[in-house]
Image (cartoon, rainbow, N blue to C red):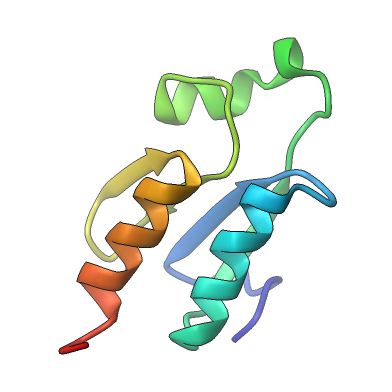
Length: 89
């Protein structure tokens, strides 16, 4: 698991010390999924890069190049990771 591999298929857009973002980080670690962290602007109104990707300025948001999925909201992301990478749990 890595949070700095620019060749990783998943990009996680997040904030420092964000509990919702950390929930996604823990799930990525559980499944040993390589990902790239992109830290976004703390000011909600400045998160234009995230808005261009997911349609909202909220974090966490992920882009999964393996499946072409882009989504935000930690609960949705965790559920997606479980279904996509969790196997038969």
